[in-house]
Length: 464
Image (cartoon, one colour):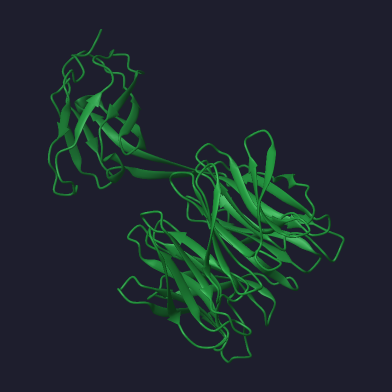
């Protein structure tokens, strides 16, 4: 027996002070009727569902293993690499390769790798390339050269373009991030000895580039990493070697203010902040992986700019922790890949609820002092898969490794069928909820409502 007709006309939510919107949300259901036995899949279509949903994070409990392959057999491939995955699941790695160290783009389409040499590097090398991917699957990369140039590279899905942004950049680490308009912002150190002559930021407004000085002075500004939040506030981690500090500066207040996540008690007791890599979780917490050149350890600093910071040693097994790359999964757990000179290993470290301590393992090792993993990068896709690019200095090739984080996350909402009970609906995106109808004892007319993450109920009208 069928229930009374299910919402033959569009329905709207009753207004609620706890939900911020400019106008009532309009919704429709994909089915006009349902059976008392339940089990029918229906779709609610509308907008604004993401703000109502709660998040459900689960671990699968499986001991996932790395799957490894060679992505590019070209001569001296894999140096200074960066990795990203597009919405089609295609893997993109940019790196320096060949005898002339050309800027190279290697793509995995699900079946095979295809490398393309894009351009020769300025000077003799493309140093410390970093890359981000935007919501249109376009790639944005930046690197420095040994002739003080800093270069921005853009891939629009079919071809690459190149822009020389600065001729006063110290060779070494740069950082790149995008604002809400997909405009690039690049952090770098001004040319100078040791750690450079201050932290610089180059920003593109859609028409021109402008460069500003965020922290002036000598022996500071190197090993920078940049993030931009949803409100277009910038955050840059970098090394101030003149004071033996790892710094983080942000313009969230309107002007750039520096903070110190980690430091030495004197300029010679500790040298944190080398090779800084930074990520931010969904709660606004920052996670920075960096190397201490004094104790030769991998360090991890976490906190917020104007709050307390906690620093722990991730790995202290000999000279280890060089060139770390960090990402955060959907559960907020950090994942770090890095180079160890102790045994010439490429290693992986993570924190998750199964242990209060860092879990450290080896992805790949080498019997040669040339080692593996001197250049590396890591990316987690929407399905919770980790993708790692790393150089194999012993064999001169680009390597690729992947495995699941074991974390899955769904966005859900409670759908209440009046007195007949409730089911959990999956919020697929901001416009779509899918659910399975419950079984009921007797046919009848029933009111349907959504119960949001705050426990507020929003009745759909009319009844069905």
